[in-house]
Image (cartoon, rainbow, N blue to C red):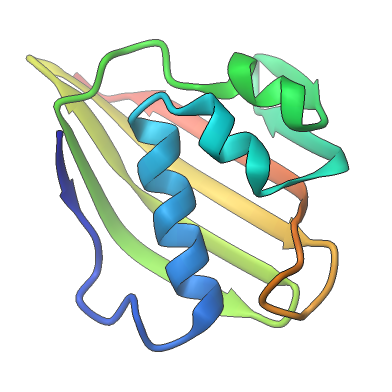
Length: 122
């Protein structure tokens, strides 16, 4: 899979974590994604449902086998972060946005809440 992250992605530890998280998510690596989720994490995929805890990550993985991931932006501040971009598989393109709330401000804090917005654009 081709993965493109913003060139300024390494300026803060939280942006690196979000970049790694979204890459593993796009690659369908639910076990790696689960490691970043707190035990009581809530992952809402808007319009589809809410998945609970690390085990819920299996249900939140994209339903396409992406060939390309482009992350357009990653923004982090304190316990919050967000990113947006798109996945491509053949002629299918899915735009996404993830909004993260971490359990704390430390760089080792796990994701406590995540909202994901997905829109198929082609």
